[in-house]
Length: 311
Image 1 (tube, one colour):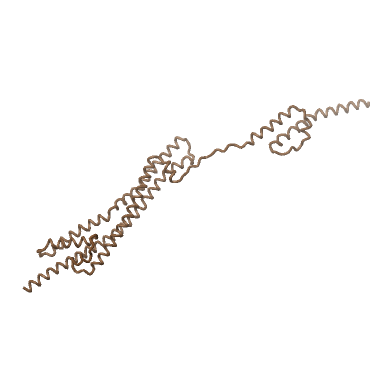
Image 2 (cartoon, one colour):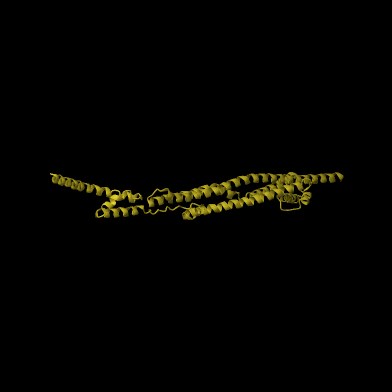
C-alpha cells in the first residue's frame, strides 16, 4: 500500500512537471523583447538560464536583438531648398522680358534724378542772377544807364534791354511812341517764350516717366505671374515654396516701377512751382525794360519839344 502511494506521488510530480514546462518556457521567452527594445537590464535572468538548451528561444532572441538596431538607425533628413529672395537674386532669376522691364525702369529712375539735379542747379542759378540784375538796375533812369549798371550779358534782363535799344534805334524818326512800344513788347514776348521753353526742358521727360512707369512695371508683373502659373501647371504642384519665387520676381518689377514713378511725379510738381516763380521774375524784368524804354521815348519827345520851343 505504501508502495502504491509512493508510485502515485511520483506520477503526480511528473504530471505537474510536464504541465509546468511549457508555461516556464513561455515566461522565459516573453521578457526578452522588452529588454532589448527598451534598452533596460534583464529583469528576470533565472528563466533565461532555466532553459539553456531550448533551440526555439535562441533564434527568437537573436532576431529580437537584431530588429531594434535597424529601427533605431536615424532616418536621412530631406533637405528643403530655401530660395534667396534678395533683390539681386530675384532679378537674376527673372524671365528675360521681366529683366528688360526692370532695366528700363532702373534707367528711367536714373534719368529722373539726373534731370531733377540739373534742373535744380539751373533754376536756382538763373533766379539768383536775375534777382541780382534787377537790383542793379533798380535806380537806372534810361536803357543805356541800365546796360552800363548791369554789365553782364548772360541774363534775360540783358536781352530785354538789348531788344528795347535795338527797337529804339530802328524806330528813329518815327513819332508814334505806341508803335515803338508795341514792337518792343512783341520782341519781349518772343524772349519770354524762348526762356519758358528753355526752363521747361526736361519736364516732359519727368511727366512721361511719372505717368508710364507704374504701367510698365505692371506689365512686367503680369508677365512674371503668367510664367509662374505656367510653371505650376508643369510641376503639377501648388506648393508655396515652388510658386513664391516667381511671384516675388514679378512683383519686383512693379516695385521698381513705383520707385521710378513716385520721384518723377514729385520732382515734376516741385519744378512746376519753381518754374512758375521764375517766370514771374522774368515778367518783372520785362516790365522793367518796358518802363525804361518808355522813359527814353518820353525824354526824347521832351527834348524835341524843348528845342522846338527854343527855336
